[in-house]
Amino acid sequence: MPTRSSQSHSAGNDNLSRRNFLAGTTAAAAGLLVVGPQQAKATEASSKITLGLIGCGGRGNWIANLFQRHGGYQFVATADYFPDRAKTAALRLGAPESHAFSGLSGYKRLLDARPDAIVIISPPYFHPEQAAAGIEAGCHVYCAKPIAVDVPGCMTMAEAGRKGTEKKRTLLIDFQTRATTFYQEAVRRVHDGAIGKVVSGEAVYYGGPLRNDYDPNDPESKIRAWALDRVLSGDTITEQFIHALDVATWIIDAAPIKAYGACGKSGREDKGTCNDHFNAVYTFPKDVLVSFAGTQFGTGYGDIGCRMFGSDGMIDSHYGGLVHISGFHSYPGGRTPGIYEDGAVVNIAAFHKAIGKGDCSNTTVAPSVRSNLTTILGRTAAYKNGEVTWDEMLKAGEKLEFSTAGLKS
Image (cartoon, rainbow, N blue to C red; front, side, top):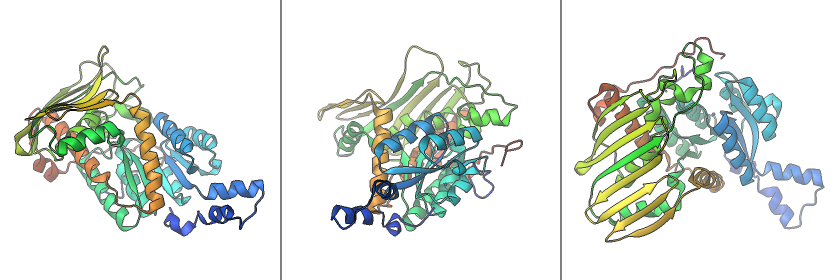
């Protein structure tokens, strides 16, 4: 993981066409090439997109399994701040032990191994720097949400998307909702006028507490329990609640003009610096008002939902639940119980297809920047316990800083 010293905010080789990885299998299919079992295995391996995994914690290992299940990828390197995590993941994924890198700069050494693509599942604070470095090194980039924790980081990621298009590199952001059929169809219908004029809405994220040991005096503890650290995660509204706010901005298809917010921490007793609840009212263009409420404590009820009310109907969506439209132009939609994994599986397949086709339009970047900035607007307003406009937020360009003192480079 990086020190962020080289840019405003948070990992190669040439295009896959250079590798001509289909040439051998095409010839074999035509009966022009006869190989033994070991040679066949090597040929099959060389036809896969080689990957470097940055972030080998729980979700990193989980999503690595999905990449392996796809069948079109091969891990060749891993990186994590903690050496044991990087080594264990490398051995499990079939990457050389010599390509298991650790420390804050481990991702840079991973890039020196020149994988075709990188998968970024590190703390969000590091995402922009690692993604930008990956694109610069000639890698395709698959990145978890949120893309950044502050305004400069969002701008860095936006530029990485633009540069990726210029350099013929794919950059995909892994939002599961946007890869789910019922969400896609419902939102498309809203954009086509199914609920008429959108007037108001609500977005909610009601979740339970995170259970990690966090020692505010131990920098390595902060890295290990980063989701409880306000700077490393961007606070709960950016790291967690973004799922609901991303759907809101997707449905409205616009960024908010301003937000009024408040937040606090009274439901959890951990030593982390993140708030456990946020409330905000967003004003979007055409006077569309969206209320937001998010919690990360307690038990008894949970939901990640977004409702938008229009002159002719309502869209009602729930992560893992029912997505539908009611009103004059209803859409029955359906339930999404497997969205967490199913959405990632779709995105992994889309990433592979885009690389193979040379599709570097990077269309997931701009909406991800917009929703990420929307969470930062709500966070900024909540910290102020007042109102902040979109333009004020961008002009201030606040950059969060994480001290790396006492950490291994």
